[in-house]
Image 1 (cartoon, rainbow, N blue to C red):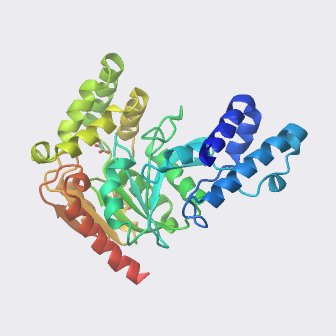
Image 2: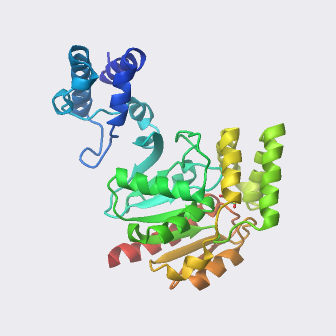
Length: 358
Ligand code: MLT
């Protein structure tokens, strides 16, 4: 039997037969690859298997209260889900309190760039940025709680909560400072955290986003949509949303990109869509704090973004000291997906200048 199958078997056994032990292990989980072990090797798998056998033996002999954590392990417990997903696109999982956060972590660098997706998308929207830029920088893309493969908590979503999750995630991964890059809702969260936790961020990239809260009409429209989704399901919302985010040309020459995003959108639970819409409707403005932002800022916007038009980006640029603005041609609201070459070039130029100055 392959080692990873043996590990899967022993882990499944723990899950099925020893729920207390499972809880204990979950509270002590680390994910790999991690800094000291950038890849999963045979040696790590063997250590992992041995440690699991030790833990089970120790547990059966002494019970959960008496497990000697240090003696039981020669290697921290690795959540098996991490290994199941690993072959995809560095699809890692880490636990923050009771929440499992799914993320990609590629490339190397002292200051990582953390990518935050828009609504109702997930981290897969950053694939081409990660592919293109990973040879030069460390890039992390996370799924916000409830989206993609991050667990769906019963909590009510808000920009504040998603911001706190990001800070907890950085703490968990020992990242004292990062560069944050957010698109649309990801930008709302990025603006929230750089204003609340300025000491944790070295630079800011805002893509197809705005600092404004919803207008009363916009808010009423979101609540009407929530009601509609609750009574008739999310299909109509999903379709009209997809129509609104792309440049018209993207439906002609970027079919695959449109289809990939459509699959992400229709894969959402009804709960996360309605809860996300409510979070967007109730978010606070961040415009009044822009003048206090003191970190290098790049603003990017598709020339035909209908959801957060270029005027919103220009208004932010005027308020943030030294901010640069780059307009992406032939792009709507998801400019990184529609014109990855232009988008990546601007991000790469900005990061190169910045990293050289640290
Ligand atoms: C997004 O892309 O995150 C949303 O369109 C943001 C919004 O609707 O305000």
